[in-house]
Image 1 (cartoon, rainbow over the protein chains, first blue to last red):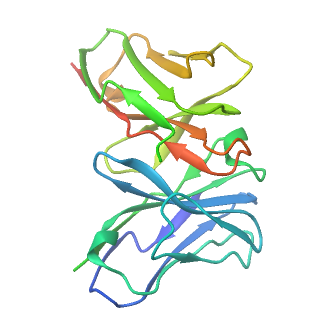
Image 2: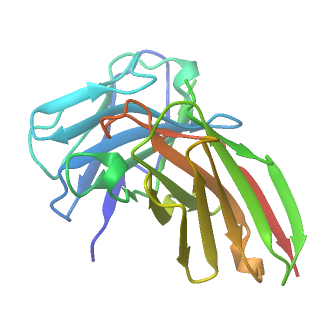
Length: 115
Length: 112
C-alpha cells in the first residue's frame, strides 16, 4: 500500500531532551516536507526537500533540523525541544520536485508534547 | 507569512445543502490546491487547479479560481454528514513551486 508513515504517533518529552520523528514514504517521491499544525494557524511548513541531499527552510524552521540521505526517509530532529514546539506534526511527500504542481500525500501525524 | 486565507472560519449546514468556502491569497501562484482533514488526522488532497484554469470539477466538488482577485472557492454540492471536516487551500508562496503554504482552514459541520 502506498503510504507515508511517521513514528512515533504520540510523544511526551521534557525540555531539552533531543528527539527524532521519523518519516518514510514508499512511493519513490522526490519531494518531502514537514509541517506543524497549531490551533487557528493551519499548517506551517518547517522544512522541505526537493530530492536527496537537498533541503531548504520553510516558514518556521527555527529549532528543527532535517536530513535527506535516502529518497524514502526524511527525519525531523529537535535537538533541544521547548514547550513552544508542542504541536501536531505532519510529514508529506509528493512526486516531482515541486510541491505546488502535484498533490501531497500526508502521514497520519505525530502529536508531540514538550513539558 | 500565510499565503492563503479561508473564509468563513466555520460553517454549519444541513445535510443535502451546498457548502461554499472561499480562499484568498496574496502573491501570484502556479497552482492552488484544496485539502480535507478529518479531525486530527492527515490531510487528503481534493483537487488541484492550475493558474490558467478557471473552474474544475471532481464528483460533488467544484473549484473556481480568479487570479485577478487572487481568490478561489470550493463548492461541495449535496453535502453529507461524512463531509464534516476542515478544508484548507494551499499555494506555493515563492512562485517556484517549492515553499508550500496552507491557510488556517474552514471547519465545516454537516448536520444530519
